[in-house]
Amino acid sequence: MIQATALSTPTAVATLVSSLLLVACAVAIAWSWKGEANVWAGSAAVVVYAVTTFTVTAGVLVGGTGGGFFAGHMAATIWWIAMAAALFIYAARMARTERSLPIGGGLALVAAAMAKLFLFDLGTLDGIFRVVVFIVVGLVLLGMGAGYARILERQDQQQDQSAVTRAIQ
Image (tube, rainbow, N blue to C red; front, side, top):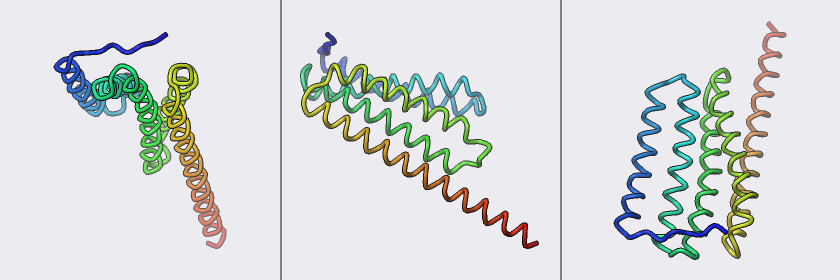
């Protein structure tokens, strides 16, 4: 069984601050190496780890080793799926030729969130935490699917209009 480790308040606060600094550092490094997919993938893994560390530590600090631990893991899974949704939104605003990296990253993050949801959260979380994480993640996935379908429909309409325009000329 997985169980929380209680930390002293100074250690927990240091962990929270270092998690935020780790996210900032990973993003800054990846941003400075534009175009390097391996650097972005490594930075994404670091960000996901830091977000999980932050949410679980904050949960244990606020709610204790019982409910706080569960709430932290619930928040971590929700953050993972929210980061994937943000990547898809970012990719939708990019040129078609430049979308592959954020779409691939978003898909990998969705796969990781689903693996965490079904392999860890389903077995570890109980009660309202399990219910909330499943409902929120499910709704976000439905929203991402509907948004993606809308984007594809819009692209198809634009292609049809450009084909008609070329045929007329």
